[in-house]
Picture 1 (cartoon, rainbow, N blue to C red):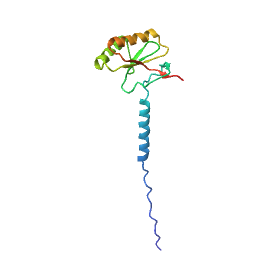
Picture 2: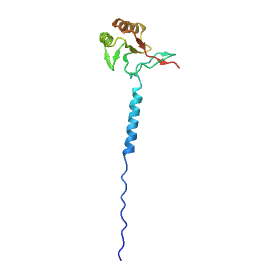
Picture 3: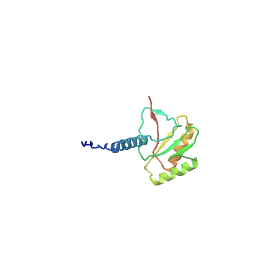
Picture 4: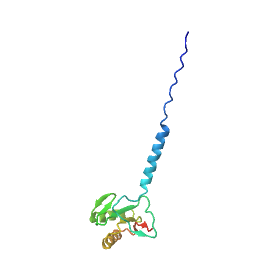
Length: 134
């Protein structure tokens, strides 16, 4: 008597494409969500105001910390370098303004000096980034 052997069924291969799609969607979400923050300096506490507006993408920014240090594009620069940067920005695109991200505990004369130097370089539109008061 000859017995028939049952055909061996192959297990279907797991389809990894949906998992890869989900991982890429999550990656894109986090990239977009992290780009919404206008600056990344955690040591700066913004002043509060009743009305706030986002500076928008591509805005030229200078971060002014409480201790008087100045950062542009994540790198610390001196006041002389900031003045030369203002002059370069003014000649590059005179109608485009700048946004200052200043710590709320920064000395007012230092902030006024930065705004005055920006105006002297030819930048008329100087904005101060604030956060909405609660």
